[in-house]
Length: 241
Image (cartoon, rainbow, N blue to C red; front, side):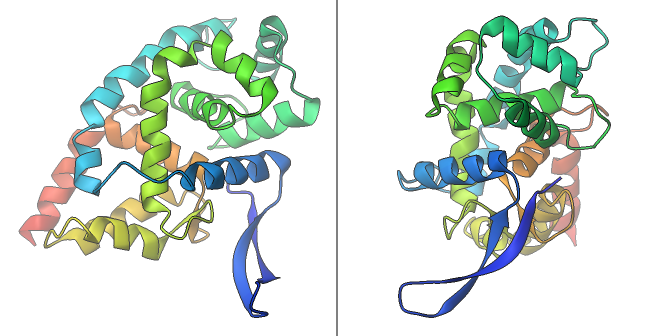
């Protein structure tokens, strides 16, 4: 679920600008954190260079399974809201009830009221993104994130690469621009396909959690065991057109 609405703001020169406005505090925190990160620049030079990192990212993200199982108290391969709340209490993470509800909703992308493994990776990445927050700093050290910090930073960096106007969201035009930089003949069609995969709620914009959900599938982490191999085949078919 992408919790944003379109609004109008007045910029310094007096003109009006359309922009996406977060509807939850968690969404606003993610956008603010992403914009702070975007001010630092991006190390990724092309979408192709990111694709080359997919196998290593897949390998590292799968190491999150031990952390996931620690959260999954009843060992049913999902985490419900009560389990998430208990785990935060166990780790001494200071989240308000609203914070926990927002975080759970943000990670429960398919709205089935539980969090599966790839959605849990989204949760960990959000915690990493929000690491400047005092409560998240504690979570970062207690949830095992330091060992995965390089991988999570690559995911944040990938989003920064796509978000050309640095507003905390990725548009269709930005996706096309980023992938077109590869110079491949079929890059336009590939860009449209990638954006459709990211735009979970089909509202024309992609936030960080939607991007992460798509990314887990791209690198091979998906409940249906479909991943990068399928995407490569699709891209090869497009190249043959």
